[in-house]
Image (tube, rainbow over all chains, first blue to last red; front, side):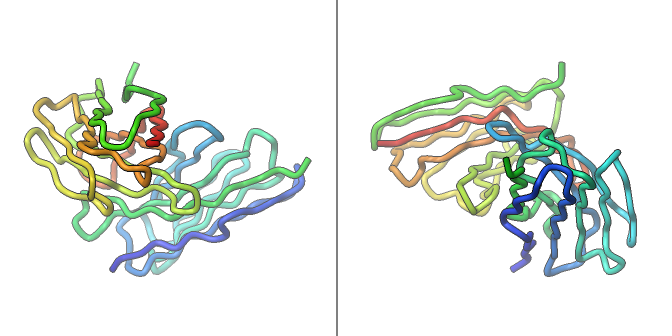
Length: 111
Length: 113
């Protein structure tokens, strides 16, 4: 069945280092969304990518959608403690009513 | 303020005792859904509803029921809870198709002993 794989499951970084999480879909996606969940919180929408090869930036966050629309990445430059949390990607299932979610990447800042 | 409200936020219950987690949204969204979140498994959809009186199973529906009698409400019912239903539950809503932003409730921590 349709799958979205997200790696890595965890990433430990020193504050100020960069962070990247990757999503790979088994099928072509019409769009992909990214969400952030702070510890103890609920997922919050960050961005949606729709076009092949699209790149969007939000301050230190850079989101990319692959040319084949089967993969996506989120890159954070110079991480800060406020970036701590789990980042999820999600794309529409074939039905276009349901979403299929990556398992999430947890960003942990080393003390 | 646009929000999805779910209750209770925290609950400890015993095996077999029926419980309902309520969910309400004030954004007139057509689509509502329930997820459970477990460590290492991400978000897994339990049930979803595309509109009033229209519901369907998600990926992990066993042991759960839902109803959608009104557009704003989408309760999750555990008829006979078991310990493997101990989890963090999220209600979510969005306006229609999968390309739209999802709004999540604050979450309900459920422990079944």
